[in-house]
Length: 114
Image 1: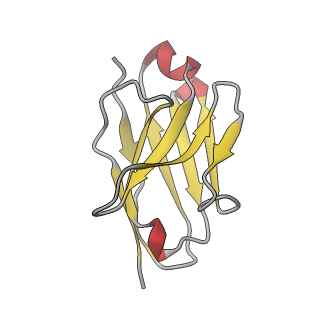
Image 2: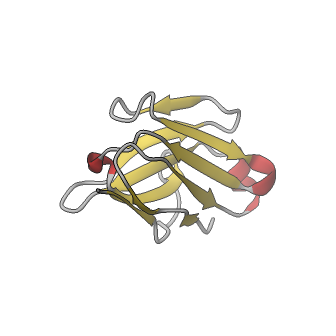
């Protein structure tokens, strides 16, 4: 079992930037395809972006060109750099493997509002 800890969320104005982080444990994290998910109030959790152990990335259409997913395997950490944020990006952001393998962490709240 891998314990996941998300951090870095906050309140930002539309057009602003934010970077969230996800820290896991062990070699399984480093060898797994990892992903960022988000869940807005009243909506289902959705896949935002994924990155393989080798660094190959895929993004949802709603964030393509604005978000960048990356990972530092030496630190067992994954990042999501979010630029040009929009109010519709407001959600709790979670990380997990893809496909989902582990218990969800607490997530980190991102709020985009003026």
